[in-house]
Length: 217
Ligand code: CDP
Image 1 (tube, rainbow, N blue to C red):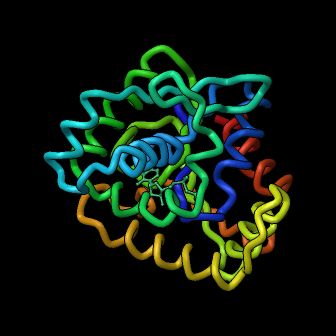
Image 2: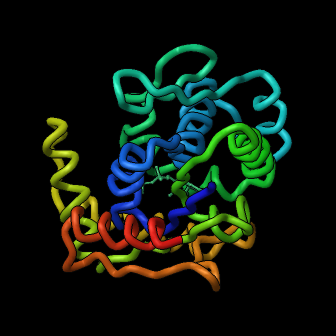
């Protein structure tokens, strides 16, 4: 079974996907973490953002996701980079990196390999459209920009990062625009995905809608 959850930043994908994976006893894969890990590596090694230079760099690195104490940790060449991939620097560059064909192709191969041996829930931008067009279930989560910025600000503040909602809102808006307008695997709802506007819903309510749909299956 493959469950695809797509949507823009702050729409609640990862929170819902994590919870659902636990309830169903299947693997959760945060595909955004892979794009972030590559972005971190490119910044860290001062790699020029051309498709050729990035392709060359991708031949030298490994990105793996592992569940440790119930949470997903991201490893770059065996080093845990779960904190580093969430910095402002990575967040502001990740959407540009995600437009590169070399990056998308590299990650696509890995995404399909995990699915060969596991039932899973994967969240991202193109999971239901490009990565797994034949996924068992597809959901597309949305929420107003204001609400998404509020959620992301709260999440950052809870992690001890002092950031203003207005700054987060601008960052999300910019990233959404790039993610939706790129020619390769843009952020868009698969025609057969169930769309859920989560603006006025709690995590439990969204979780329950998805869980009920999957259970009826
Ligand atoms: O958690 P958040 O919504 O901030 O984003 P993320 O899931 O960590 O993804 C970070 C970025 O990676 C997105 O803004 C996209 O540019 C890119 N991404 C993508 O292009 N395709 C995916 N399947 C997942 C992420």
